[in-house]
Amino acid sequence: MLKKTKREFLCDIGETITVEVTSEGTVHNVAFAKDGEDWDGQPFVFTEPTDEFRSITLFLIFSNPSGGKFNIKVFGKAGEFVFQETVPQDDEFGSVSDSARGYNFFKKA
Image 1 (cartoon, rainbow, N blue to C red):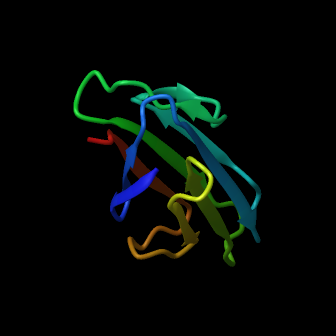
Image 2 (image 1 turned 90 degrees about the vertical axis):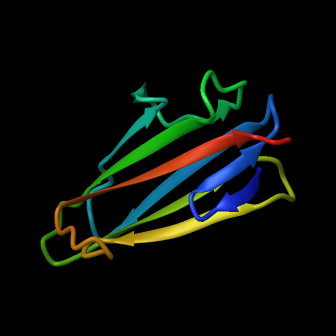
């Protein structure tokens, strides 16, 4: 997996993509969607997109009114790009009870 833009990545067909989410200061409450469908968040094999790209969305629910954060890590092949970000309860979008992050995966040329 290689970085395309901040939350967009280039992948090889057959590459296993792993998403790890940990939480601090809040109950670990995360829902996952892949290509618009419910998903269990387990590693998945990147396959040929039917459209331009494959997508995942993480829905993060905060339980502690005094703060907390989720740490997200997205990676593919060993030795390639690893994406990491932290989503605090009061993040850049002003969310205090929930937040979401979307990631798009494109086929490498």
